[in-house]
Every structure is written in structure tokens, then in C-alpha cells.
Length: 403
Image 1 (cartoon, helix red, strand yellow):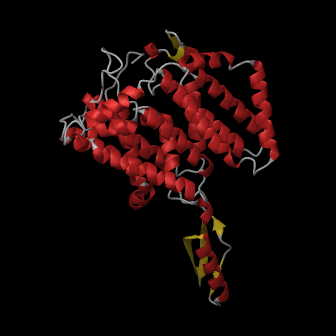
Image 2 (spheres, one colour; image 1 turned 30 degrees about the vertical axis):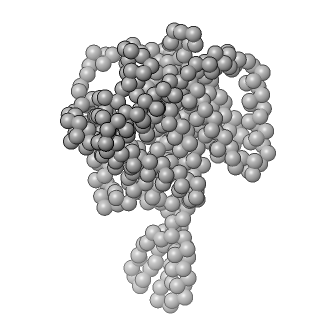
Image 3 (tube, helix red, strand yellow; image 1 turned 90 degrees about the vertical axis):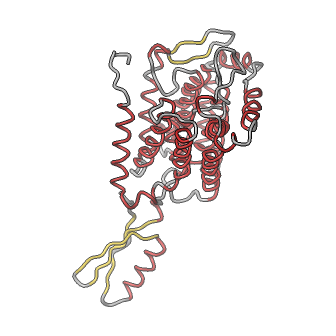
């Protein structure tokens, strides 16, 4: 629109086409491979159906269309995640896009100035709001910290952690308490196994943090946070009010009050505010069914991320991403709609593929060759059988992945 060109619903149609192509490529495997995000997709579908069937909202309504596009985007990003290394590359693309907006930062007037991207530019993704900008760079900080931990080369590790500190500095410019708290929790979890891996990474991080501290880079940010610490967040008013509205009649918990009526004039007489909590937002807008699916995803993802962290490519990212996103979900209405959340939810949900636990078994029967993708222990047993049988021969099992 800033160039004077606007094609209605073009982006949504593109996402629909590409997501449909992904599902066509997967064909019969789609059900199995999309299973980890099934609860989220079910939540989105239930949310849309309640709005259309009960609250008489048009399927083309801009607010409702946001949820439809979000589901398509989630399926697209999750599909691309089947390509090895995608979740390492995609955050870098988002980082470059976000960095290009930094020259256009402006500050909200008031007692505490908070950074955001200039509203007049029309940039989407929440960057024009201080909280959204803080979420973006809080996510990048978590990403670069984990990349630094996982890196085998010292210079790459220092470069990644330096980038993480720059991202945290941008977060402090927004004076956002939620993103800073979420990033701190996620980074703490990411460091949980570092001491078992060696002294050098910990020593390098301490040296780097000491240099930044002595430079005084965060001194002004600390002053701003001290000023804002005395401000009320509004959630102590909005959350009880949302619960009261949810329980005001017997039918409300089942179908909600409708997305258009979620806003509450508790903090301002002129501007309505959502409950600042995604769980309450879903319940208030569409009732218990979408809420149940959404809650089910977090229970399943949280349990699996703490009990089965072996064999997947992004195991080190999974739990920190979930923690970061969960904090943002608890403190905001629409954090799930951000591009960075597509990454954290897809990684946090886990994958149906376990690269390290599968081997390609090649068996020759007479003049014919047969291939099979088997779990490692089954491949080993099959190899033993073929070696002991005079008419069968087998190559050494090779690690492989499904494309």
C-alpha cells in the first residue's frame, strides 16, 4: 500500500496455493507428518467455524481471515521444516527483514519512551508496536544464543552471542517486560546443559557479558525499566473482567461472545483492549472447543519436549522456543500470528521424522535389489539375518532421511 498498489486477498490466495501444493506433495503421508500440529489446526478450524456458524461472521472478514491465513502459514512452515536445516535458515531471513526496519525506529511519547517501527510505513507483523518489536528481537536473541551453544567453532560462537546481545539491546529499547522475561527464561533453559559440555563456552560468554557491562550499553535501558516497573500492566484488571464476561451466562463458555466483542473498555474509554492472554482470548471469542484444542497442544508439546528429546534435528531449540512462546501467549492476544511464532510452534511441536534413528537398508535378493527405511535396531536385526542366509546379501545400513 505504501507504493499505491493493493491487491485484496492476494497474500491469502498465495498461501492457500502454496500450502495446498505442500499437501499434494505429501499425499498419503500428510496425516502422519502434520500430526504434531494437529491440535493447533483443529483450534483454528473450530475458532473459524464458531465465528461463522454461531456469531454470523463472514468468512471474508479481515479479522477472521487472519486466522485462516495463520493456519495456512503454519502448515507451510511446518512442511518446509521437513527439509534439513530449514529452521536454521528461516530465522536468518526473518532477522534480515527485521534489521532493515531498525533505521525507521520511532519512540512513543510519554514518561517512558518505547521504541517501535514508524507506523506510517505500514509494516506488518507487529513491528509497529513496541511489544511486537520486542517479541521479534527476543526470539532472535534466543535463536542466536542456542546457535552459539551448538556451534563447534569459537569465532562462530562469539559472533552468534554478540548478535544475541544486540537483539537484547533492541528489546530493552522497547522497554518490554514480557519479551525480556520470556527471552531470559528461554536462554536460561538453553544453557542448562552447557556446563556438561565444557569450560570454554561458559568462559567466553562471561568475558563477552563483562565487556558489554563495562561499556555501559545497557545503563540507559536499566533506568527506563526502573521507571516502568511502577506502572501497572492492566492485566490485573483485564483478566478478571474477561473471566466475568465468560461466565455471565450459561451459553457464553460454550461459544463465547464473538471475536468482534472481545474488546473491553477497562483501560481506556475510547479504545477497547483484549484480555492480553491468548487462552482467555480464544475462550471469550469462540468458547471452550478452540480453547480445549489449544490447551491440548501445549500439554502434548510440553510433555514431549521434556521426555523425548533424542533423535530430532532441533532438539536443543525445542524447549526454549516453547517456553518463550508460552510466556508471550500468556501476556498477549495475538503473538501466535507473528512470523517468528510459526518457527517456534513448528519446532516446539516436534517432527514425525527422527533422522538419527532411521537407516536405509539395502537388500539384494538374487538379481534384484530392495530398499527399506527402518528404525536402527530393526535394520541391524535385518542385516544379521541377511548375512546368515546364503541366498541373501545386504549392504551396510546407511543413515538417511525422508525427502
